[in-house]
Length: 544
Image 1 (cartoon, helix red, strand yellow):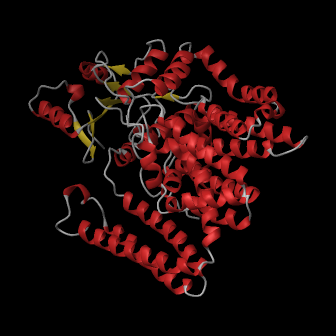
Image 2: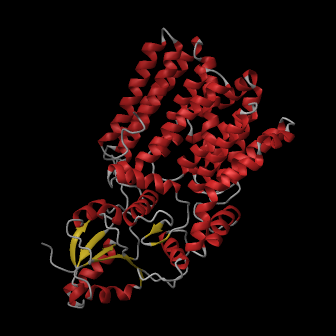
């Protein structure tokens, strides 16, 4: 299956996969299911449902990359099944099949399913919530109450995954639809008290219990991480208001080219369904365009209705003879372009920035040429086979892209941590020097908190590891013995059986130069234990 084929093929990407995989590992290792922790400190950026799924996967399949990515991969597959079910309810089976295929072959949805963070999971829960609300709006009692209860439960799951927009966004879409259809009184027929009570029963207990354990939780999580991120500047990834209007069509290519045609077709076939899906897509874009901080993954809920519009378009044109030639021609042009790209990046004239790309890049033009040949061969007798060839080619290209991306250079400590794991003892001290290496504890399978050395009196100028750990220390009541100054490193190593220091190559050269000059304390007479292009692991005792 495409969603599962490469979940373990590459190291965790940093910072997100290393951070969230590390938090889930700590949760499992420490059996701390209520308060997510980062290096032993309360990490309250997100609710726990995602971590519960990840910890369950790690428990079942071991502490490895495949177990971490299995969760988003399964949610990606579940999203395709959801689109199939809703499109079949709104239109017919042909539209449902094409819609599911388009979503699976969309770069935004598929690549998000191969990346371990909360965005795709919350998009799925929001999608199920809206699907249930659609059924509730069009159902009669007693089924209506059942659909409302299911929607409320899924909204609770969405809220426990990433926060309050799990209920706010579906609510906005529902109200907008009822107003547009002049059925606003129907909101009282949808058992709002039942829905709110059920949502609260799922989402509120965790927040209440955490507030008892971490007194600053409400201000930090609700005020800071919700209203602050939504209304204030100063967070990462600031983008202009039109960012999603430009990036969403690009992230769904080539299928986004069919969206307008599909929307018109949906309006002709099922006006109510077209309005619901249109509001779903439009209000999602509008909602996430308000904050200055924008990441492409935030807009994933809009991919579901747009895939259904594309499914309507494909179902309309699948038997038209005229589709054979443009599909075949487009795949042929893409093949030549990818062949040229592969030749350039593997030649001596390749820019330095792309020389990390390995021979796997040749799989891109191979997949495209195979798709073009398939579209030409099969499409001559049945035009819909040309469209099927385009879907399968998109899936193959996305798989090839993952093969290429596996070589992407990053600040991974996987090799170093695995090398150190047999030597690490419980009483050893691990120190991260002026950088927090999110994935080290995961790969070393070391649940004990590491020491992190930095100038903690300096202001946090970015929303990064420094700000996360300092915020976590504040939530812990400023009791964070694992946060130390750089000048404390030698003193901490004196009292340890062995000290391990993760640092940058530049700082490693400074430590090794001091040892060579005899300036270092005996306990900090550093030796290189392992190294990569971007990080070095030093130890202060001889290696066996």
